[in-house]
Length: 159
Image (cartoon, rainbow, N blue to C red):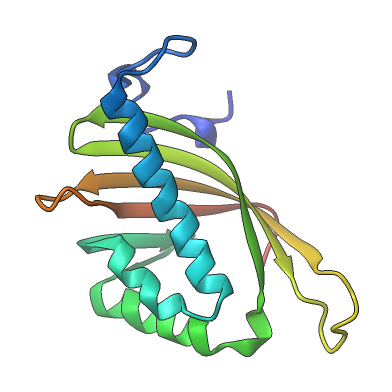
């Protein structure tokens, strides 16, 4: 099995494949997948700087050998927001999800990236990358799920 496809600790999963999850697992999955979708909606609509509030206060975004958190994460997302050459569409595929505890969960999501055709608004977007996201979520005292750590691994293509 590809080690990048394994969750950090698969033995702690609450529900083995094929069994109906309890309502808490369903609610947590829905909330966490909403966070994933919100992240890319914000990026794709030119509001990447607003993605920072989807992370915990000490949340980390890991891109290869680069780790961003706090001010460096906020600055990177602001730069991303202002980069008009990177307009496009992020299309997350179905995520695998594990509720580890009532306050922690993990998800892995394949992400398809399409970029708008440069200088050709009449052309369809061009496929640019397939990426694997590994997210660890934490539910805060306010009941809101946020990203504590996002690992981004480019599988094919890339930028």
